[in-house]
Image (tube, rainbow, N blue to C red; front, side):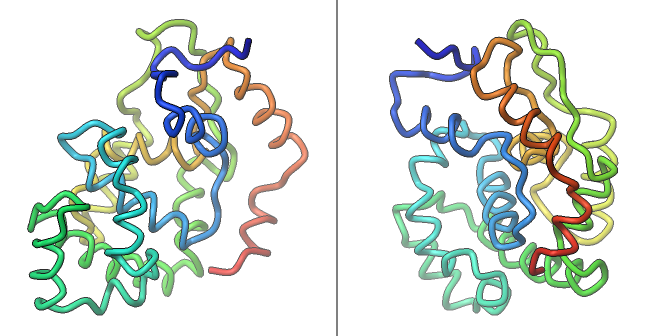
Length: 205
């Protein structure tokens, strides 16, 4: 039987699939990073599983996370989203998503891609934490504080240090799988064969 992270509720198959296939896997595709940032910001004050269950609804509501299309969403779109029971109907979060799309595009223009900007915070090498118990899971870090502060300076919203740390975990900047989790070592082995800076240079922004 596979051992998995202590935080995971293994009675939920979709949660298990997310843990096994996505959580902690390095991401350098900007479309996927915008999706993760949108979902993480929507999570603020809620459980991640609440948002995970609504993920398909978010994809439909926010144009498959096409950042250009989201950036151009209008007040009429906002009103439509406020009637959408498939997402969290929080006006501030909806407006933040549109705002963040606009800021995301600005970062792409400055850095070549959002991925290049994001991964520079860890010098293009994931941090591997020593996780032996639930008490070892960080909620934030010095880097997430710095990352969040810079995002705020750039005009992003609903992305504080804790939310940003969760994003770092999800997108593979940090490997916070338990030491005994079956997913931890394969990610370490994968990254031993990759040069993330090269991958980012080869990826489309």
